[in-house]
Structures are given as structure tokens and as C-alpha cells.
Image: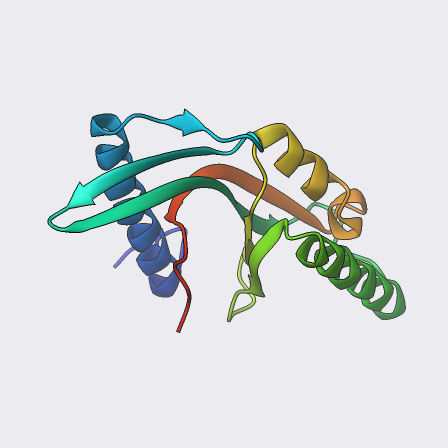
Length: 152
């Protein structure tokens, strides 16, 4: 059996994200996207007697960067600065979710950003010390989420 590019858990995550995006986008097509006073895109849709408010966020997938040969001490300093950067984004209410992957694969972690546009998302991530040092790269995608949804 030929080994795929991503491990089975990653394939599962990709599938879940893809299904979520497909469902959200199919509803978006039938709804009308609006922009609120803060510049965030959103739309409402009805499912039976429930109205959902969908808002555009940005999904960041950190991947291994080309420069991962720092000393243990330098990598530790970069990690501390990386976490401080994420702490500041969370304090500013621009970071909804963050966490590392559970293995040592190519994908290193994910974020969900609460910013109104791709430029602001890119600016935030480009200023991450790990990205600046080349230890991490990233994939950035718009992501529609239901306002008020929480992880359990």
C-alpha cells in the first residue's frame, strides 16, 4: 500500500475542514453576505426554526519552514517569542483558537483568527517570530464559522 502525503489523522482533519467549508459555503450562496461596521463579513441562514449567524474568520495552518536548524537555545527563545505573539493576538481578541498538532509531522499547528480581512491576517502571521526566522511557514484560508460556537 502506497503511503500518502499526510497521515491518517491529518486526512481526517482535512476531510472535516473540507466538509465544514462546503456546508458553510453552500449556505452562503443562498444567503446574502453583508459587512458589519467593523469590516467583518457575515450572513444569516435559517435551518428550521433556528437562525445561524455565520462570520468569516481566517484559518492558519503552520507548516515546517525551511530554516529549522537553530540551536536548542535559539529554538527555545523563538518558541517563547512565538507564544508571546499569540498571547498578544489573544489579548487583542484577534486570536480565537491556537494549538500545536499532536505529532511531529509537516503540519505544526493551527490558528483561527478573528480579523476582518486577509491582509490583516497575513500581517499578523508574517510578524510571528517563528515565521520571520523561517522555522515556520503557513497556509492561510478564509473560514466561515457560526458565531458563538465553542469547543468542548
